[in-house]
Every structure is written in C-alpha cells, then in structure tokens.
Length: 434
Ligand code: UDX
Image 1: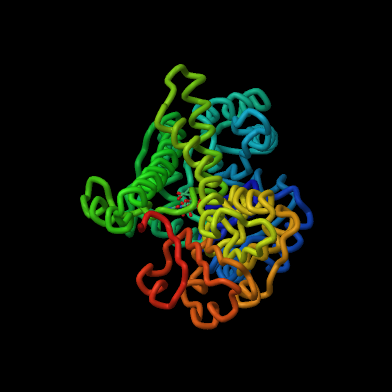
Image 2: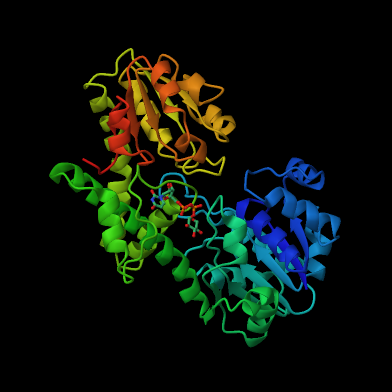
C-alpha cells in the first residue's frame, strides 16, 4: 500500500518508519527543508532508541522516502496520515488545530481516486468532521473517508508500542476505510492485536480519556505518596499492594515529581476545555491538572527542606532534566519548574542529563551544564535526581559521596533504597517513603 505521512515530528516519523517496516511504501512530507535534508542523509532529528536503524533499513530497502513536495505523494497515496502538531494554544489551553486544517486543505486539493485520510494527531472530538468539511469544500467531487486513528506511543518505547500495541483504535463508519485500515495494520492482526472499530467521535475521545485516566492514576499515587510521608508508610509497597488487584493494575503507579512531556499536560488541558464547553465538566481531570501543577513547587520545597530550609548561595547538582528517561524531550519537564524555583531562592544549579542538555540550554537560564554525573556533583551541597536514567541507578555511591560537599541526596524517582543510602552515610530523602 502507498502511505503518505504529513508531518515528520515524533509521531509521524515513528509511524512512517514502522509502516514502511510492515512492507508499505511510505513517503514522509514536511515543510521544513532543513529537517527533510537531514532525514534524507539519514540523520534523525529526535532521540528515540532503534529509530536510526529502522529508518536506515527501510530507506535502503526503497520503502521509505522523505520530501518537502507533497504533490505527487498525496496524489498517489492510498492513505494519507495527518501527523502534525496540535500544541496548546497560548493563553487558553485549547489545542491549536491550524496545522491540521492546513494539512486538510492541502490534501483536499491533491487526492486522486478513493483515498483514506487518517488523523493521527491528537485532536478534540469533532475535528474529523471539520477535516471532512474542509476537504469537501476544496473538492466537492473527491472520493474519500476521514478516519480517526489515535496513537498511543510512549517516547523511548515508541517502536515497540507501535509494533506491539495493546490495541489499535479505528474511528470511521466507512466500510471501505475499515478494510484499508485493516490492510495497513495487517502484520499486527497476525499477532492477534485487538482492533476496535468505533465511530470517529468515540475514537477521538478514547485518546483523551486514556491519557486523562493515566495522568489521574499518576496524580493519585503522588498524593498517596504525600500521605505515606505523613503517616510513615511506603508508597512503593502501597502501589504494589493495590496494583496486584487486576482491576487496578500495576502500571503507572510510580510516585514522582509529577507528570510532564508532550502529551499528558496538553491532553488533560484540552480534555478539560472540551468537557467544559460541552457542559459536562470532568472534575477529576480539573483536579488532576491543578494537583500536578502544584506538585512541581512542592518538589522544589522538598529540596529546600532537605537542605535545612535555606538554599541561598548553595550549589545544587541536578541529575536528569528530561521529562522521562530515553528521550531528549524537555517539553513540560518538571525540571523546568523546579530549577527556576530553586534559583529564585538563591541556589546555584549545576545539571547533567545524558540526552537533554542541548534542548535544556535553550529553556533554562544560569545553569552550569556538567559533562557527566560525577563532574555535576563535585563540591555540591546536595544532589537531586529528577529523571530516572539507567546510568543514575548505577552510580558509584562512594565516589559520589566523596565528591559532594555535604552528602544530601534528594531522589524524586525512588531509584535508591533508603536503608542502603542511610547505611552509606547519606542524608537521603525520597518520595513517599518515610
Ligand atoms: C504518553 C502516553 O503513555 C502515550 O500513550 C501517549 O500517546 C503519549 O503520552 P509519554 O508522554 O511518552 O507517553 O510518556 P509516559 O511514559 O506515559 O510518561 C508521561 C509522564 O508521566 C512522564 O513525565 C513520566 O515520568 C510520568 N510517570 C509515568 C510517572 O510519574 N509515574 C508513572 O508511573 C508513569
């Protein structure tokens, strides 16, 4: 099948490469000439484990192409995917759909023969109807169907999530489109991945409801962690104890500094707005958003408290800046709130992240960036672990202790054992483990 992917951001690039790997002929289109030039040379603009090789292989096999010229790619396509950004609109939190609508206009002007237009971007309920209306207006005679097919890719595990998903959701009432979507994802159904066919609006809502629920689950365990600290309980054991109940499940119950990233913060806000606009406000999501925002300040206060209530003039070493490990993504990373709050209280911040420093340099001011974890902690008054990169789990603790001015460790991801850290002589503070 011939697939055209509009947008070579995170979702477009991963989906394009994976569809090519399924055996389809995929053309990825982007307006950004520099980006396309880099991709044509085999340079991947994002950090995602395994993506380099996947792109390289499929380009070599003649199944994956990159171009800035969408004309031919859209004309020849059996399916055109819209995978452009839907950022939060500045000021009001609504998803900005201008890129989606621009893509729809472009597609409408070019498609030939029956074409399935698939929305992969996360879009508010009803956007599929808008896309359909735009295309009909541009080309009243066009033969097409607009399908919603949300992505559930986690950064750092995106290729695995694409190739071994829990389910594929396809929202359309058009029978021909359903058949074409089945054909596109065929290798997955041979592995018995469930495919759920629904209406387009339901499919659009599944994405938001799923991310909203996960954000709520994380926020719940974060609040339980605070309670654990107050009553002398252990949040990891509580999470295990409740998670072993299949009705709850063990995943997404790791307490930490609050969720970040390109999806949860944006999608919870958009869900909140859609719900309010439709006079069906979701109070649980409203509370989740509020609690998660406040949590980052709470974490900064935890660090200040660990240093005796005053960080003025002290050097704080930060290990991990990205919103989670195995990505270079700094979008809505908790570090972006925690670091400036510490600086406002007079702290000097030195930081190290394995992949995120290039991006972090544009987003954080007056931070000294270290070349490695030991360089980062040298002579610092405290070390704070914000992101649980594997290399931070395997630090030489004696070396770290010798390097620190005072042996204070604030572990916001619970990657060390409190008993071991205390036995080594650290003043160790973590999350929800009194
Ligand atoms: C998420 C969804 O998982 C994915 O399905 C969706 O399509 C896009 O958004 P992603 O943002 O890449 O993926 O990362 P994810 O692993 O879900 O983590 C999101 C945030 O929650 C991170 O800041 C992470 O640190 C935090 N988190 C996650 C926790 O604090 N505790 C947990 O137990 C799990």
